[in-house]
Picture 1 (tube, rainbow, N blue to C red):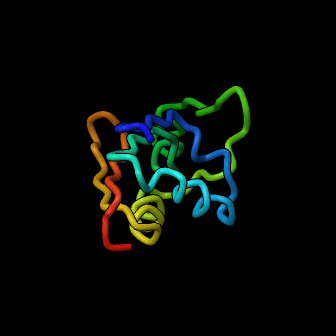
Picture 2: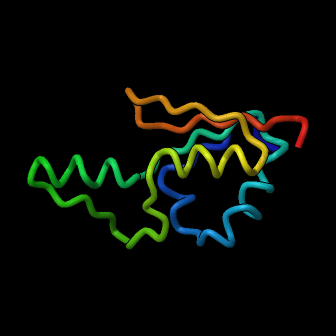
Picture 3: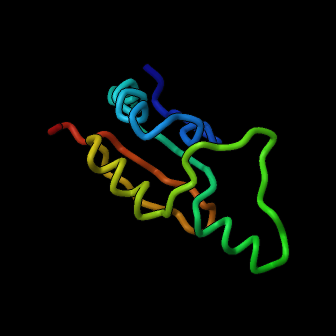
Amino acid sequence: MADIVFCNGTLTYFSEQELPNVLDKFRNSKMICAIHNTTEDVAAAAANGDILTTCNKTRLIKPQNWWMDTFTKNGFNVKYAEHIRCFCAIPSRSK
């Protein structure tokens, strides 16, 4: 398994039901770095008069806290690095 898994929007393409199985595949990695849009990002773009879009419609645009809770519930210790808009999740060894 890789030391670091980098996801640039990838996790938002899975449904809420699929996400636990996807995250489980990364439990042997040392870290997941996940950059993707949240509802806060969409709201900030709208406040600037921009529409935040991607080439494909994402499936899970959720608040940052939802993502933090999802990583935690699926056995990761997670922090959000605001300056780079990135979730850094390290698998906990006590799942």
